[in-house]
Image (cartoon, rainbow, N blue to C red; front, side, top):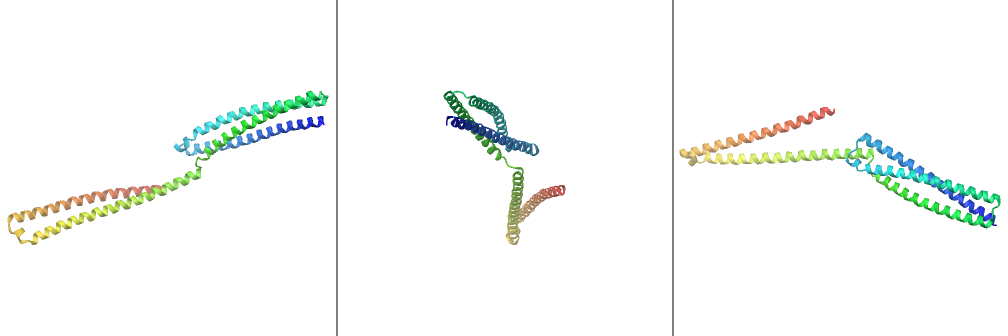
Length: 253
């Protein structure tokens, strides 16, 4: 019974070593996956250019590299612990084969097993902490928009900009139409006032009345000339904008 119990404890120690090896393999796989993603991200940054949105994730890359170095150190520690456990198992196997004192062997096996379990639990906790840190960095890196998302954002911004420019042009046309109608109204009011003055016999009966009427007509002509010049300047500006748009369209074609 004692020998069977010792073999069972020995098998348990071997199982602990296998668990540790499995955890190391999983850690290595996660490391390779993370390194591949980092390389893809760096390549994407190199191709697209590091703008303000991407630059804020550079510290995350440095953190990831630090975690990678720490993971390498942990791996070395795990290898040393595994070698130590394997040496202890070999020593126990040798003691069992040579028929060492049962009581002493039992105590030694218990101590070795407890120490191995303690080391294994410590390694698991340390590994879990590192994995959580790596997952946290990975989630933050996932927040970086992909190339397809950036293209969609750029297309949407272009559409919104075109829509805004269209609305702006419409608003300018409405204001221009309103101002033109307002000026026409002023001219019509002056014309009405002038016609009323001409139709009044009192206004042209005296030299002073005729002089006042002449001054009014000159003022109307001068105001009309100023408005005409203003409209011509506006027309020239619109023509420049139109020519610029035509040149851009021809360059794109």
